Image (cartoon, rainbow, N blue to C red; front, side, top):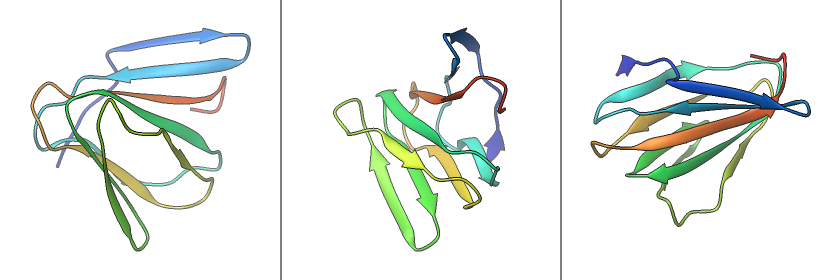
Amino acid sequence: MKTITHTHNVTCDGVAIYKYHPNIGEGLPRHEHTYAHLTICCAGKLAVRKEGLEIFLTKDSQPVNLVANEWHELEAVEDGTVFLNVFSEGKY
């Protein structure tokens, strides 16, 4: 998987939102951190993988809560995918 960085980021009232625009095979390879965050797919299709689980998100999917200290990875499975990671400001 090709690692990407966020294309936009904003913070407001203690909440940080990072926006990503990956194409097929791009995303955030396996990693973990000491804080939880939400992942929201806004367009395209996103694979979310963590221990024992692989799910696919689209714009119609419920956001996924990724808990602290648990590895996960996010990979676009369609070109033109857009997703957001939402977490407490100052954590990333």
